[in-house]
Image 1: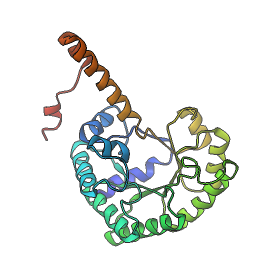
Image 2 (image 1 turned 180 degrees about the vertical axis):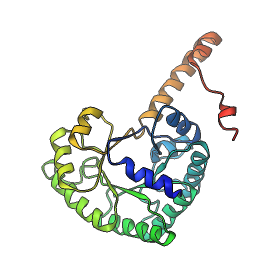
Image 3 (image 1 turned 60 degrees about the horizontal axis):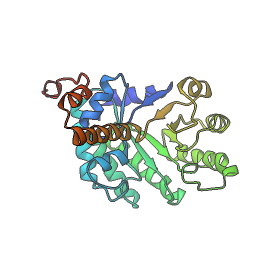
Image 4 (image 1 turned 120 degrees about the horizontal axis):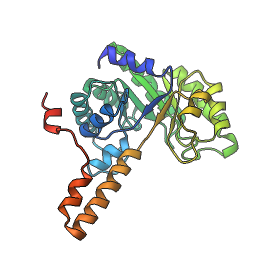
Length: 266
């Protein structure tokens, strides 16, 4: 982990940070060249790109290799979606996160899912402890799925999110990721109820960047958005080429790609 990149990444959360999530070195470089200030991976997109379903069964060694490859391809800070640490054991989860930090990540996402909230907190504490031993300060973006997975009744979702946010802050979390939240009043209530910078996920009905800034949101993630767009475009091009065998049409779809060999030569 670069201390300079880590400090930069923390500072980026002083205003709205928009993250178009990547899944490999090439997509990360495309995102950087598009103007992104940091690279975020999507655990689902990374897993799908390697032929795995999203979840704890994705080999941690594969994810480490992806982060290492991304670190070779970009110069901006990298934050890695680490699911729930790829283990139900807090110590092992923290050790897995440490491997991602060693690979070049300066931030990580750590989620609760449907597991007990107390287990999530123990993982955050374990990650913070192991980071302190290493003398590094990763941005621990603690994700809670209260909204996304309807962990409580809708009327209780904001209150439960804030309850978890307070505990996450005490455990050493740096930020709060609440995928599934999309309506302005709920977003505003969460922003006002926690000191942690709020991260939301792009989804239909979510406010645009201008409105998110006004609400005080500090991070917007595309999640699997870019991956799905890329795969849809690839499938459409494949179907057209299989049907027509039109080389000119295929070539025109390329646009103006960079010289990838030159791009990755260093």
